[in-house]
Length: 284
Image (cartoon, rainbow, N blue to C red; front, top):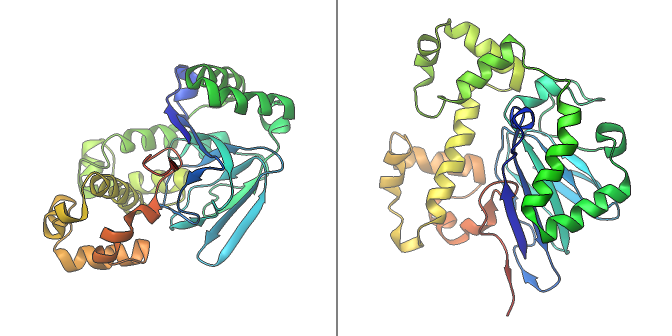
């Protein structure tokens, strides 16, 4: 298994891009064949070999295709098909970035969708260049990052945040450390203005974004502990749930699992795309 995450070094690129990531499953690798992908307020541009299939199950609605594609921000947990060997090189965009970038052919906001993308038209990258970049990603993550910076800066230089995007960027710096009701006062604008700007740029509410961030933080916390170490009452308190029953209802709605079931199967619900990394291991 090869897996890494790198952050852009170019300031223009980092305005819109959160990170680059690579995940590859080889023939001898053991992994969950149908893992779950957490709700994610970010969008991803994913580079893959043109004959490699992808499949995302949105609660029974399956989006599938081959090669390069865009995974738009999604508010629900997805099931992936990782039953065969694959490689994905991903560009994880920041929350609200697609509002400024405006992906050709898609209105904003586009949520809970996957779509094929033509990298020649979007980034002026030939099929051979994508193949070379995937090969480089296997060998040198830092050099791959630099190459991605060089490709993206030519494209992203034309885009800029307007007043709504700038306000959303300010919100994102404090949304996980301050109550939503105080954000307007903290950022010196009305709460109504704040809510409208955030919804306009992202397509979802402040509360939905905060909930997705909280779920990711909680799952990362649980990953670092064994089943015996998990105190669900303490977890409920740590992550702002009123009590343990509130946490149980939340996990069942988000993951379809009770805490007891998750303690056993928690590896089945992961963020393999630019997030939690303990996913694959080589067989011995």
